[in-house]
Amino acid sequence: MATRSKRYRAAAGAIDRNRRYPLDEAIRTLLASGGPTKFDETVELAVRLGVDPRQADQNVRGTVVLPHGTGKAVRVLVFAKGEKAKEATEAGADHVGAEELAKKIQDEQWLEFDTAIATPDMMGAVGRLGKILGPRGLMPNPKVGTVTFDVGKAIREVKAGKVEFRVEKAGIVHVPIGKRSFGAERLLENAQALQARGRQGQLRAERRGRDDHEPGCPHRPGNGADGGMRRAEKVESVAGLQADLGRATVAVLAEYRGLTAGQMDRLRRAVREAEGRCRIAKNTLARRALSASRYEPLGPMLRGPVALMLGFKDPVAIAKLASKFADELPKLEIKAAVLDGQVLPAAEVKALATLPSREVVIARLLGLLQAPAGQLLRTLNEPAARLARLVDAVGRTREGAANGTPVAD
Image (cartoon, rainbow, N blue to C red; front, top):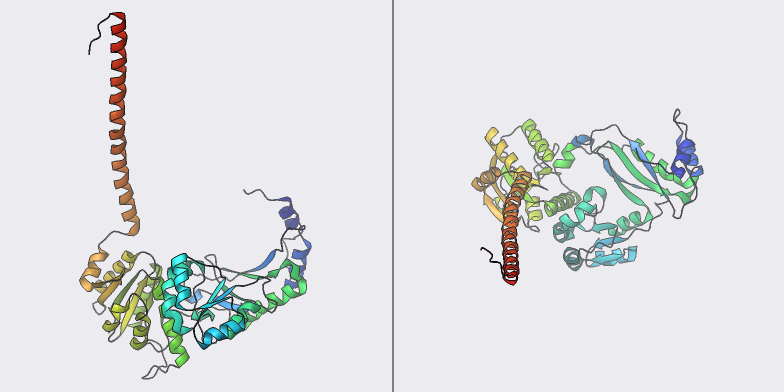
């Protein structure tokens, strides 16, 4: 067991574990416990939701604007140009730029900011930064309001205390609600703002249809011949797909004409379990997103009902999955794929699926490296042993010569 400090034990001793505390009393008890520190501690609210984050319809995420902020000075970077860049500067953005800023991040791994905001027309350049910004939680995302033309409003909300949250593996959401120096009243108001999101239904699991289907796609009900999409929805669709393409390692294009909704749901679940994502959008919007990425060669192949299966880690896993479903469902036809900028026809995608997984390849490489290493060590040691025997023989020869005693070779 971990050894707890005196300060921790004293704070834990002030809590009665056999009763539930009202929120206001819990905050007062928290502030009264523990001694002084050399820094202003952050107070965090943890909410156990009782959900299974592995299920797409229970994967809770969102944003909340805390009335008193978090107590942290947030550095905001905005990808914009023209009038929107001027608007971002006037709204208080710390860094504003376009392609040159994206190039600086890509070439120098420069990350001197806490939040990134982008206008939708900049997602072509920003999408290429997915592998850098994505793992750090800095990638602009239309679902949390960081891909928008209203950059002034987005900057003001972030500076005012807008925080993003997402449920973790244990089904718990952790949200910072301020600093200890805020006092009980301000911390309580921040906590109540988060509670209000839940009561209004804004703190909820994202629905699978919104997660995997963009507005206007063939499986989304209520769309007319033109998809019934507003311009804002189209912009959001393109920006979201560009963000996914920016961090994808492989993209497999397949036609799903004739598949049932149940079969498509099974395919999407399997892709998610393989740490990928199945994206379906209007072909005209998908072409626009592809044109600004390394997967542009797939654009001319977007005809009819097609889906993009994107892999974010092991490209072989997605190829195996696509080939498996194509064998099981004759109506699912693999058209092509793009891997490392190279176009792979359907036959080569199936050939890629026969390769071992990344883990197996790494294990085999380690085995190959270890075997030559042992042989090399023996080879290097052998000349040294011979040299030692030679030196010893010469020494004995000289000693025998000095004593007048012959020495055999």
